[in-house]
Image (tube, rainbow, N blue to C red):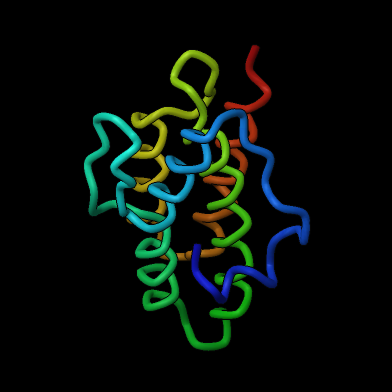
Length: 126
């Protein structure tokens, strides 16, 4: 995870279901694959690069708010996406939809709000 996100997240370390959950969570943020995780494809997209893209697209005055929101939304999505396929509620298709929402919204904070709302709706599904 980006160093500048650290201050925007809860001081409690994330709870992982398994060792692979932690490794996939790292993949979500960095794009790097640990050799222990099977079928992992390194590279883009990853949330660290998404945050950079969102910051670059934001007006200077909004960048602190965009950083905070992007970090929190990324953690919400990343923790769930990196869980085992059999139990997770956010999958690769959802990530693509979230990325599409962010890429096509001129108001970055509004886009992050939409993604946050959509992710929370997915987490509320049974």
